[in-house]
Image (cartoon, rainbow, N blue to C red; front, side, top):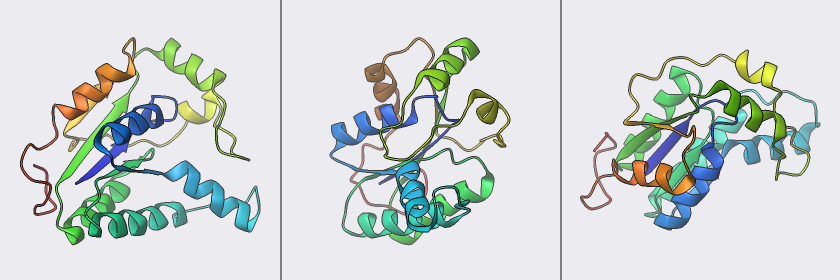
Length: 176
């Protein structure tokens, strides 16, 4: 199964993604880690472009092919990246679950963005101005929208578990 996250920086994607991956015994695939490795290989301030996502689609496909469940953790801001994740699930022949992570409380969201520290060497989290100025297209196809404002991680994970398929973990690459 491919579980694809999306949402602005600071909404809680990585925290929830890691907890969900631990709970499911899944492979946690984080775009920030991939993009920072690409930057380190080419120059710390070089723009990454689509390379990070392209690497992530390939790694997800490899792991799905091994029978692993994959939790893909990225901003996933535009339709083309979401469609590429759908194509990845379809090629692997696995169910797809799309989850948008939001924080509906602007003060809480801003506080998270302004006080967080990266756990990736050399990675600089975006500023609040960068987060609110970022392109983020509406996501009409998400199977679940999880609002992290005022909620603990376990409650957010439980909301995602509630939308996961209960049938065996193989399928058509379409939503369950």
